[in-house]
Length: 189
Image 1 (cartoon, rainbow, N blue to C red):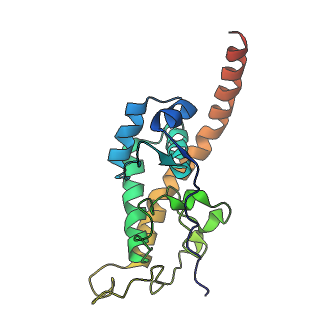
Image 2: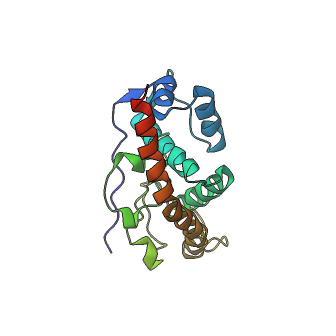
């Protein structure tokens, strides 16, 4: 199977955290809490690449769909472990864990929160554990030798993701109605 291409470098477009907060209708301190909770790197000179806005927008939408923040952090932790087992190149970008937000398409191959393309359909629950997405030299022991298995972790991840997607699906009609209602109320102002 051909290797999944590395996500493109984050776009040059940057925003301040205050601009991102205004775009999302959230307080800047709220977003700072998410940066800490999801262990994201701080911006450079108070500037954040566009991938932060995309990631935070996903989190906002999921919270609106009644997905608990603790569940999101749990999924996030599993995704980062899975990316590490797949040897994602973490050396070229400090935002490697959300750089997948800069790419579009292949939704069936992308992890849910990070948007990382694993190179195969997620629902097939089949990845090639030997794939190495980084140019760094191989470690002394492989993940399987150290008790970690990408396929096992992918199975756990998919089991944890399934109820989240079911909740989002069950909330979609309600959220759509709420958006229409909010639009009507906004016209009254």
